[in-house]
Image (cartoon, rainbow, N blue to C red; front, side):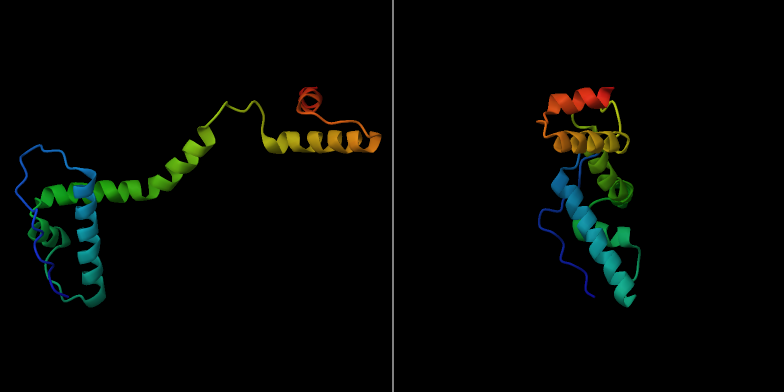
Length: 128
């Protein structure tokens, strides 16, 4: 595996400069690239952070911070999406599993008696 050509926009960063999302993504992708290369053939010497530093010109400490943040968020991204999905809307006053049998019984009773079913009637029956 050969080293990648140094990116044209690589520059020394001013101390304390906030990285854009694109710059962070570039660091993560470069890290993944060199890590994969090291795992495949094992011929690439040196540390992965140092290779990213040589390629992009980003300090190794910044590379380490970005990679650590990426690894901690990697597993949390899916759980955050699930939590956000569960939190939308009004909080439920009951669980679906607890109410389902009562709704099922009420719907069957109304169907048997040929009565109309509305959301209000189901809600009133479930609240009893």
